[in-house]
Figure 1 (cartoon, one colour):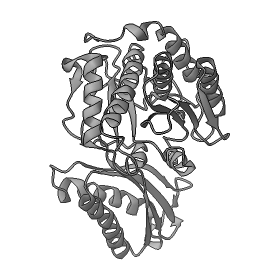
Figure 2 (tube, rainbow, N blue to C red; figure 1 turned 45 degrees about the vertical axis):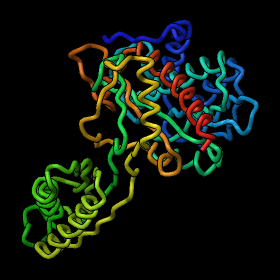
Figure 3 (cartoon, rainbow, N blue to C red; figure 1 turned 180 degrees about the horizontal axis):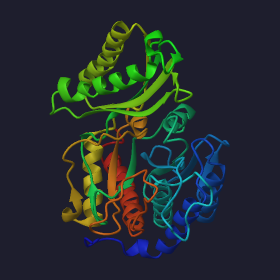
Length: 397
């Protein structure tokens, strides 16, 4: 584990952060259903003496720590409240008590970190205003848009967030300027053939056969049509067809995800899916309908805020703890919606439990080294101070 250079103040609140994280972990709630989670957040903000607003189920909890000067710079720290529809298999003493629900993406840790930062900032308030944004629905539905629509961020100069990951060790923070995550889109292809008896395929148009051929063809979109230097992914995650072993399926549904980092690559893949579906129609005398649903845009960190994040991280973990990003993640994140409106920076916190034990996000076995809570809380505390100081010195531009 790397040496963490600046965590003296956070040691006293570490047990509380661990307790909060475990409570969140044990009681996961899905997107826009985070009522109990919001209640726990508000209870802690009450304990800290931090004012907040909450408009009920489906909305965010917005805490506010003010300097008393409305003209002072205002920054926001964001955490997500929702969990995933997954069955936990960690064996933790505090594992999920809700079947089919799990904090498999670290949002429990993110909330504990931001609440920890709120405690640190409350003890030694900066000369500015800090919003603590606990948003609903990051995993599904883009809860960031709910927060933006509410108008609570209208005076915010910058917004910051982070994510735990096993890609790095505790004491490592990944910070980058520019594109950090991919654009995500979802596609649904409905195939309509002609049903029939399994013993007489010549009388039917087999939707399963068409689906199989289409799956194989789609794999060439990236492998044979996209420059290997341009990150892109097309994954088919769901197929539905058939009703019985001896019945030729008349219909099939194929669903998947597209991840890209360049607009021209995204357009090529969208058009390629439609082109291939059209070719299958002609080849098999079937009908194929393609629907592409726009997902989260890419996360693009602004340069100035990435520099502020670098300074804050260096203060916490030293230069040896800063990790450069080799290439953008093909994952997606609705923090991107904030960054389309407000400057900001999204970082990653190393949270691997053992040196050689990598567990991916969204795995039923995912867990974190809880020491990362110290790093996250201190980072959020420090970045709020660094940002407020910089904006105040530059005339609150």
